[in-house]
Image (tube, rainbow, N blue to C red; front, top):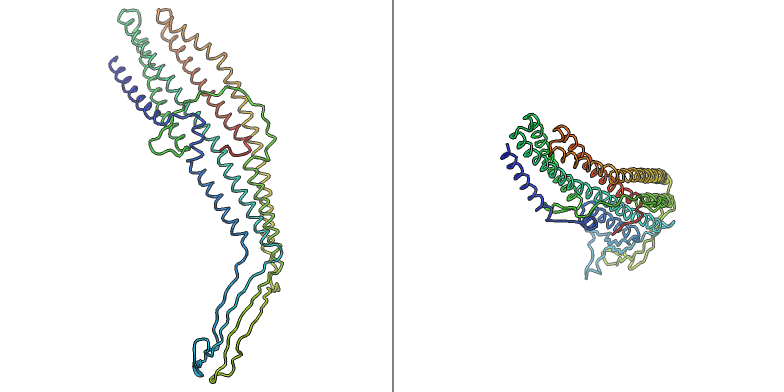
Length: 422
């Protein structure tokens, strides 16, 4: 069985070497991971494109109506003919006309105001995407760090279990240990190696999850090089909920809806279309009806005799009501997110401190004492297995507690974030 364990160990070392090579391709601090994500993440890029689109719509909304040019020729009589001479002397009625829509009621200004608020909302949305991205990257980064440490702990424990198995086999050959105890140690060593293999697979999943957030190229697997943050609870308050990106976006959309409502009301103010034309209608022997050159002016005004923009006004008011509800909901969710993040931060910080100061030192001492006693024949196999499992569980639970605190800290920072951190 020993050769089999050696073969398994070599295989695991080979896998670890491959993983190490993959890690070495992109070792990252948390700050470097944040910068990569903000520059390469697809959601962040789409949010930036949405801002460009909103700014283009603002340019369109602020533009004044263009005039219309009309060229027209009438009174062409094939029977009487169009007369002799050049094109200007032909007996046809030619008209050049320019029409200009004159908007009234401040419609252009109101369109621009609504579009400006939508630009502000798009920018706030982009800030909120980056806020959530920083939170997600921080949590994925610490998931990766936890996965790396779990691999280290479980590989060390697997090596320790195999070392203990070899010692037990020697004691069995010397008649100092029962074969059933050696079998228990063998099963424990196999279980420990399986756990190490499973942790290695989980490490690859954590790498791919972070790489997806970073917008990394295929084959670029990150490696976390930062340590765990200190378990300190910040006293920063959440009084600045109104300056959070998602709340600012909801407020901007409400302001845009109010401007759009004013624009709908302004639609009841009649716009005027003014037209100026020049008409050329020469007379000839074949057609003495011509009037020569003349100038005309036209004014066009819509008549609200069947419809007075009631639907547009009602729809705009409904949009205002919906935007108000969305703002209230966003504020409520922001407050709930902040309260939840603060509670989780306090709880996880206390748990980490308990592991660091009490649980881990006690588990380490108990493990060292149990291994020493077993190696000198003063403890049974079951005793050393229990001590070993307890120590392994304590170390893994401590890693999970550190990861929970770090992820809670990332969530809390995102919950109180007011503006983009470029």
